[in-house]
Length: 233
Image (tube, rainbow, N blue to C red; front, side, top):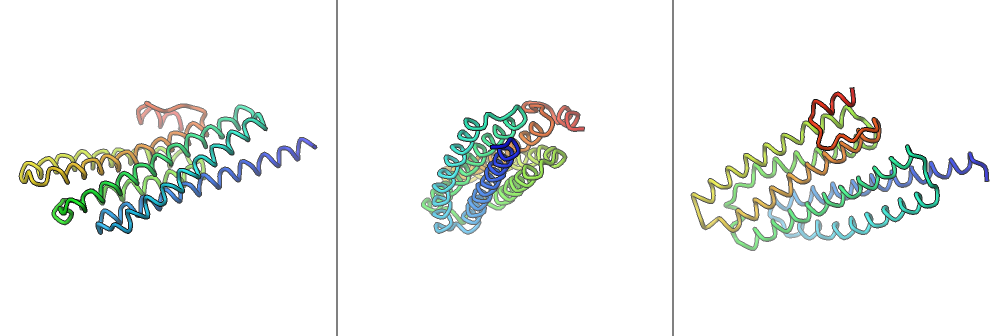
């Protein structure tokens, strides 16, 4: 078998894995959309759809991870290709965790519905933060597909907006609980829900950092924005 043929097979395997990663990303996006719908309408049907998608996401993560391990063992890729495969591995891990957070959101909505206090809670700001987090993941997946470092840096900046939304919502929720202690239990569910939204933003940020690592070969985790912008300039 010629080296050219081997190279062509390897390229096909990489393309297949890339497509599967994007498919997983689309499935996780669906989870988030359903979780946001569950929150906005207090819909048990949407909660159940999120939980059903979780099982599919978990299965796909294991399948892609197995494909990656098989390719690494069989092809023994060079440093550059190995970096790509490792980035895929880290990306699917982050996507699976985003799915976990969407499921956590759905279960918190279920708890709020069961409490009977759903309509009286301040969920409007939370839906805005959830929409921001969903949009950030979409941008991260698009940037990952295009290996766009400029867009990756923009994602890192936008994650700060989600953090600010979270901080503002926590302050508002504390005030709400102080004014009406009867809402403390369902309000705590909202607090955990808000934390799940913030973590979705964090995982999108992790994917953005992977893009910079792939393109520039620089690990920018725990770096300041100024240092990251310098690394990609």
